[in-house]
Image 1 (tube, rainbow, N blue to C red):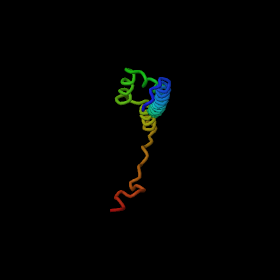
Image 2: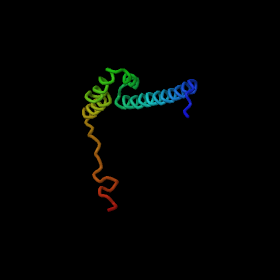
Image 3: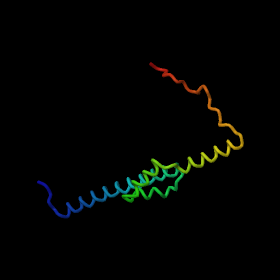
Image 4: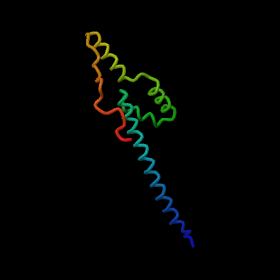
Length: 106
């Protein structure tokens, strides 16, 4: 026979809510850390990852990441232009890679 004690039901729901809340909080923190790394590697401030929590701003920031020119690429292009102005050539890439191109096991 099921236990219909209101105190037991309240305790079970409270525990369940606490567990779900902790899982939600952990996933939010994890997503902020991931977006922080993405924005940092793109050359933006990592604090822009907090905008991913704002409903309309997250779509705008994803569009900026997808279609905008990243600051890291702007800096790279400036360095390449400075090197070209000094007469330096781009570094030569190795012709023969150090790893085999064909599968070894068939």
